[in-house]
Image (cartoon, rainbow, N blue to C red):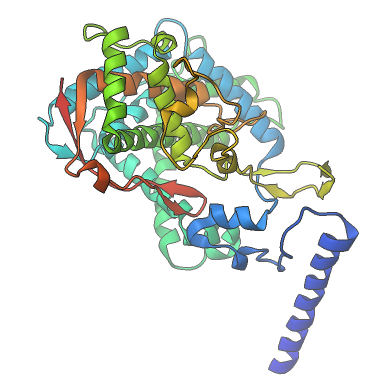
Length: 440
């Protein structure tokens, strides 16, 4: 009996393999690459510890996305972020206020060597919190600390080999014991926090005066309640608010933290930034976003930090919504595709010696800032990162405000500082470090 079952399983797998070969090589002209196995595709041919470089070698077509729901939620989020970025209390003012709180807190460290992770994460989280929830957290708030720890845990797991397996085989893996159970608890904890915030807003909602993203979504829910096909429902509200909060907290703070590490490694770059800040802004007023137009070197440094960090080398996955032909190759509807952003950010045709951290990549011969079509850390096309504008403003204002007030010191000599992020699955994880914020 057992032998018969095994023989049947072998026959089924062989048939699936033949169908896969036929689909790839004969029936349709698919992009070049190794033949995928049934169910697991090319996973065995990938290096789970360095997924980006492994995928660059096998040249896949991969990714995911959700059609109409994604369109509606994205359109609404962009409009709402724009609405709360202007008016009585614009987004720039919110960032400047949060920067002031951060400076005060950093002064309180009295020059001790500290890990800047939570300091920067709390600051950036408060900016997006003021938009999504209408308020900020106190830096000593234990709930905020707990939320940030949950997000860091989820991010690390998602980047790990186990996280990749869990994502690929979610329908099966969710029933097995393992680290994914802890991640599920963290996700549940974040969802419960968002749900509690939504319930608070519901009790005090004024449809004529939205206070934040949640209010705006609730108002849309009321307006669309007679539409049976509406995407404006409680589940999508919770997930949209959570996505904004998560994305608006993690990437910008990690970019700043990595930027400070690069300045410790390259003190000559930090010195030039200080010089430009003193020349354009001075010490008696807060930096403003418009200052960037007079600060080409600082702007180039911030761009180079993002290029060099390359935190999401595979970009955000997408799914082909219809049968598509691209450069002579056939991509069937439903094919998952990753835009390999890292291949552009490290293209020597645009960035000579891309493995070197060098702000000159974004400066012309006269020392003026120059843009590059290959600068795509926020992706490109219709589905580019909707928080790009907010992130750029945060990076400039927080970066310049901190450097206006402090110089950095490392417990290590520059030559001993490791700056290479660890390649771990689909994202890159920063090395841990400490530094001292010395008041100017």
